[in-house]
Image (cartoon, rainbow, N blue to C red; front, side, top):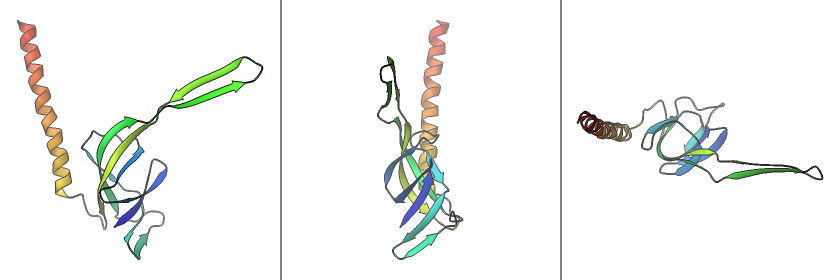
Length: 140
């Protein structure tokens, strides 16, 4: 099964377990995000096309990485005026793995949601312990 989604002003054709880089989406690594702008979905000859979006269809994706792309250099020079300008830009992106394509208003599977919740709970416990140790060191 495939879907055509729109995010960050661009359109992507995706299938389950595809990894792609999209414009930055807020969230931590391991979080599940839902992309609701599905333009079309289907399998083989059975394709549903939206006008403009397919109602009730979403794509669930897991955030794999948050990063910055390579530097793009914008260099402007005006001849015979001793005028130059050089600036660089690094676009932020989010790498996501498509976990499933959901139709008819379905919600992401419990597996994906539980995995995200488990990862959220683990860092909270780790962060709490070092704070207590720092407080005890300061008291001594």
